[in-house]
Structures are given as C-alpha cells and as structure tokens.
Image (cartoon, rainbow, N blue to C red; front, side, top):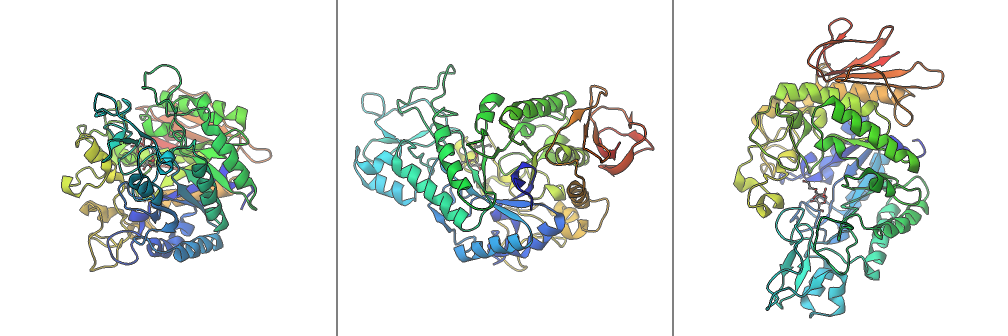
Length: 534
Ligand code: TEU
C-alpha cells in the first residue's frame, strides 16, 4: 500500500455492536467482524476504523473505557483482536482503533480510587474534583453544559463535584497531570505494538481545560474547547507515531467551526489527519457544498494536510434521511422528526453524494450500512432506546440509536443474518422493510446502492487522477457542482453533480465512466452525479 496512505484512503467505519454477531447474543462482535472481512475486501475499501472495543460498562456504547488494553468480553478477546488485525493486513486492509483520552469510565481503576479517596488526595488530582458554589456547596462549580445536555458536574458523597463534559459515567481526565500523559502515551504504544496503522483520537479538541474553570461567557478563549496547550499533547504523540516503522497515522475527531483553528491540529508535527464534519451539517445545496469544499481545501493547503469527507457516522442522522427531508433548513444538532422523509429522494441524492465525496481530493470515510442505503430508524420504542443523550436531554433529543441499528446481511426477516438464526434479538430492532436492502439482495444487482459503491471504489483505485491532488472548478451554473481532477499524461477526470431542478447538458467530448442514476442522452437529471473523462 502506498506511502502516506492516510492522505487518500477510503476508510470504512465498523461500529462493532452492530456490524455482525458471531456468538448469537444479539450484539456484534469480533468473530462476526472476522467472518465479514472478505465482504469488505470485495467492497474495495482501504482501511477499517473500529469504534471502541475496550472493556467498558457501556454507559456510552464503549466511549466510557474501563481498560484501554483489554477487549470487552461482549466483543471478544485481545487474542481475537490481534488475529483480526493480522487477517485484515493479509487482505491488504489497514486498521484504525479509537482511543478516548478526554474521559474514562466511572469503573476505570483511577476513578474508583478517586472515589474511595478523600477530597484533596492525590487520587483525585487525575480528575477535576472541586467544591461546589453556594453556602453549602450545593451548586455546581460552573455553568458549563454537557455535550449530551444537562450540567457537566456530578456531586459525590463527601460533597465534592467532578467534571464530565459528556455523561456522568464519563469523568474527565485532568491533562495537567503527568500520570495522564504517561498513561496515554503507553496506550498508543500498546496498540501500535499490536500493528494498528492508525488511531482515531476521540474528542481531540476538548482534552485540556482552563484550571481556573471560568464560566463560559461566549467571548474570548474557551475554557474547555480548542485550547492552545492541547497541541503539546499531539506533538508528543506524533513523535511516538513517527518512531514506528510503516506509516502510522493519528486522526483527530475535531469538531470546530473555525477552519484556521482546525488546520492547527494538522501542522506537520501534530495529527496526520482530522475528520471534516462539515457535510454532516450541510443541507443539499450547491452553494453551501461548494463553499465547504473551497474553504476546506484552502485552509488545509498551508499545512499541506489532506482533508477527509464524511457523509454519516455513529453520532448523526444517516444521510439518506437527511437528504430525503424536503425541509432543507435541516440541522443535525436538532434531530427533529417532524418533517416527512422522502426515502426514494434520499436514496437518489445519497447515490450522487458518494460520487461527489469519492471524487474530491483527500480521504473518505464510509459509515457501515451507507453502502446498503440504510436510513435513520426513527421509530425505535422509547423503552428500547439506549443512547444516554435520549435520557440526559429529558427525551427531547431522540439520540443516536437510529443510526446504530444492526446491519441486514441476508434473508427476509430480522435478524437478517446479523446474528446466527434462532438466537437473541439484535440489541436494537431492525425495520422489516430492510429486507429489500440486504447485502445478499444487492450483491450482483447492478442497480443497487452496494454495486454503485463497489464500482466507484474500483474506479477510484484505477484512476490516477483521484485521491490526493489538485482539483479545479468548472465554470457552470450556480446550482451545479462540476470540477476536474487534472493529471499529467492521462485525460482529465470530471465530476458533475446537478443540484438544480432541471436537467443540464453534460460537457462535450466526454466519456462516461459512472453515473449515480439514469441519464437521458447527454442530459444530467436533477439530484444525479456523473464521473467523466474529458
Ligand atoms: O463524540 C464527540 C462529540 O463531540 C459528540 O458530542 C458529538 O457532538 C455528538 O455525539 C453529536 O451527536 C465522540 C464520539 O464520537 C461519541 O460517540 C461519544 O459519545 C463522545 O465522543 C464521547 O466519548
């Protein structure tokens, strides 16, 4: 595989709970994943990113880690993880694991020791324990709001409060403490020693906090997001990654609106790459998409970092559903269900969208199931919902379960081959209508979403113009996105996406490589994209 693979890899996100269940307990696991590696190889991806698979009480689906060096028994064993990494490598697939450094689980030995210790003890210094405000210390130390809704402080028996930017089951670590730094450097080595090619850094902009813990006041430097001193951590981590053979990458989960500040994480001595989430919050609108593409490429150029494109992940409403909403004022932050979804429209746009992202410069992330055209499951019964967001927001935000429903592999009724038959029901219920979207049904059907993905991935590998490199906008109408990917020697490659309401004429003298939907002669219908040689 190529040097600096992370610059333009296609990375498939496996959410282990929901990919494939090998042992029949209704929850996905490593045995299940292993049985599907040949599918991923067939699909044509370059790398897999696994969401956390570590020992965890699963208060936030594994983003509450109790032991960073152990696999949760729900998923399997460390030996199985090692075998999985080795087998993937044999198939030419790289592996990325998810490390969660902002917080640990309430069950992590450090936090248990902190709870057992007294206020002011060294065990509490690894976290953010503070006195409360008010006469009796009955008010939390700050007004901060949790990423999951509600406050960021929970009070313990002796009256102190501890900080958690997410759920109370995820106490924040104190990155001023040398133990914390040493421990995570050792965790990185642990996984690099086991051959992983990359590490996703969860909540990468949140780790360091202003020790004075001031209120969030909207002006000036933020007390817990994107602080300048967080970059010291990534400089140290880069030295570790670079000390290994091969080409080990650090990939940041950085949610930041400011593109200049975002690019700081990608300086040559920091992270290799970071998730660009802009498409997740962007409606199906040519001007907005064009602005994101141009601004992203411009902001990454000074640090010579590649960008990444993401249409869906385990935290947001699946894009078939987002694009199927007639109401384009859609915002992912309010996961509202009150506008109807036109699924055929969502599918048509999703087909066009993947041709766009795979044609742009940089790396692309695919979230498991998007290649099947899966949509957000919005009618999960309240009692079956698992996401802490649903509970912490007082059931205002439906949470993220709807994008985490187990995959349909085969057959015409749940569990659709996700689990061996005659076993426990999948941990979240699958819609009966997914029988038309199984892998089994789509494989070999040239009109299916799955075969579109596979063809696009095969072409992307074979065309030297795609992946890393320059792009030029073609001068077309406002509601069309059209660009070329030039290359020496070869004919230029062009991608054209029609976001208007009328068919448009394709450029003259082209050769059609791939279309996301039916064309009428040389006309490109609305919500359709093509790849051309020009
Ligand atoms: O997400 C970090 C993050 O910023 C989330 O609050 C995100 O904004 C939210 O999920 C959007 O709905 C990461 C993980 O991707 C997420 O699954 C975890 O719950 C979170 O960290 C805590 O570890």
